[in-house]
Length: 155
Image (cartoon, rainbow, N blue to C red; front, side, top):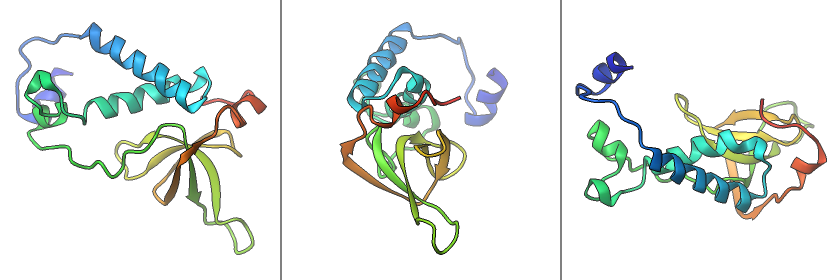
């Protein structure tokens, strides 16, 4: 890990430490996110990933109002357009045939890393799907509607 960090940022790691307080903060955020979205515990890993993504992109008073991403990489993290409400309803574009529906209903789970797009829980297939062509309805959340109908969860 030290070799990867050194080549990625050009900075040297003096001492590798963990912050147990941040673990508690992430756990509290995950509990709130799952409760607000009405999602089952099966989605805790997706919620942790998105909570960590949010924490790394919001300013902190501990580092003089900078974001952790800005402090580590030296560039500001200003792409706030891709942030959406965890567990909100999303409709993603599908390219099937002329007579099939043009969009499927899903639940927003987070942002993908490495590719430009969103992580969505497909309600029909009961699996995580990635899409970049998404329309969000953040005014409504699917509170325990589809998650209680079946035991399908992220694998």
